[in-house]
Amino acid sequence: MKRALTIAAALIHNPELLFLDEPTVGLDVVAARSLRNLISNLRQRGVTIFLTTHYLEEADLLCDRVAILVKGKILKIDSPKALKESTNSCSLEDAFIKITGLSPTIMAIEKREEDIMWRDNLRGIYYIILKDVRTYYLKPPSISWGIVFPTTWILAFYLRNPVGFEELVPGLIAMTILFSTTAAEAVVINFELRLGSLERLLLAPISLSSVLLGKVLGGAIFGLIMSAVTTIGSVVGLGLSPNVPYLILIIIPSSLAFSSLGALLCVSVREVFEAQTLLNLPRFIMIFLCGVVCPVSAMPTILQYLAYTMPLTYAVNGLQHSFSTASSMMVLIDALVLMGFFIIFILPAIKLLSKKFE
Image (cartoon, rainbow, N blue to C red; front, side, top):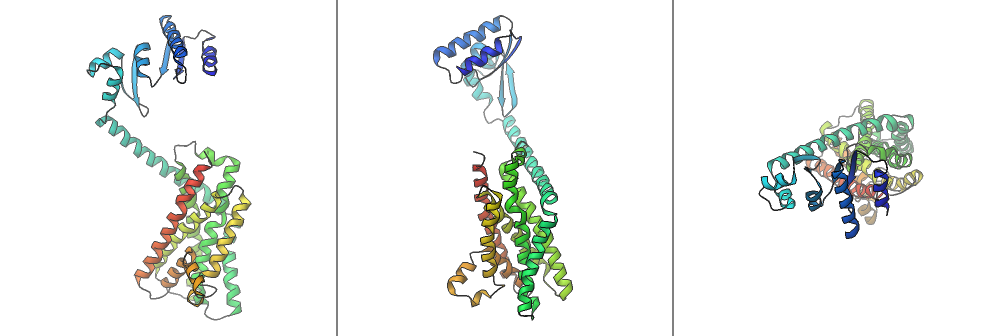
C-alpha cells in the first residue's frame, strides 16, 4: 500500500521525467505485473524513466537501454538486445554475469576503491586526532589531571620516606601516562554520542573502527606529550641517565594500552559519569599493585598474579628497566605485553561501539 501510494504521488502531476528505485520489490505477482504494465504505458507516452532494479528480466522487458553498474561504476551501457548479442548470451542475466565477471576492469576498480578507502580512513583518523587534542586534551583540566595528580601521589610517598626519590620516577612516568591518556578518553565518546557529533563523523567516508582508532590515538598522543614533560623534568632535575630508546619502546605501547582501556570502559556504559566512575576502580587497583606502593615481589602470591594481569605493572617494569642496565630482551617483553593489552582492549571496544549504532 505504501509503495503504491508513493508511486501515485510521483505520477499525480504527470511528470516528464520519473525516477523509480526498485519499484516492484516486495510486491505480489499481480501487483508487480500491474506496475510493469503501468511503466510500459508511461514509456509509450514519452515519459523518460530511470529504473533501478536487480530483476534483470524486468530490465529486459521494460528498458530501452540498460546500464550495468558495479560499485557505482558503469561497466557497460546499451540496449538489452545489444548487451546479449555482444556477450553471446541468451538472457540479460547471462550477459550481466559475463560483463561483471572478475575482469581486470573490475579488479582495477576494486583496488582503486580500496586505496581511496584507506586514504579516507587515514585522513579521517588524522583530523579526529587533531580535533580531540585541541578540543579536549590541551585544556587545563586534562593537563592538571595528567600531571598534577600523579606528581602529588608520588610526593606523598616521598614525604613519608624521603630517600631514593629516583626509584619513584618510573612510577611517576607510568602514572602520568595512565591518567593523561584516560583523563578525557573515558568520557569523550559518550559525550559526543549524546551531542550527536559522533554520528556526524560517520557521515564522512570513514569506517567506525577508524573513528574509534582516531579517538584512541588522540588520547595516546596526549599521553606521549605529558609523559615527555614528566620524563624530561625528572631527568634534568635529578640528573638521571635513562636509556632513551628503551623509554620510547615502553612509553608508546603504554599510551596505546591505557588509551584503549579508557575507550573500552567508555563504550561499555551509557552515561559520561558512569565511565569516569567505572574507570577509577581499575586505575586505583593498578596503582596499588603496580610495584610503586610496594614491590610486587613482596606482595602475597595471589596479589602478584593479579598484578601481572594489569598493564600498569608492565609499564612500571619497563620504565624501571629503562633507568637501569637491564637487558633489551626484558624491555622488549614488557613492550610486547603492553601491545597485547592494546589489542585486547581495542577489539571489544570496536564491537561495543558498533552495537550503539545498530
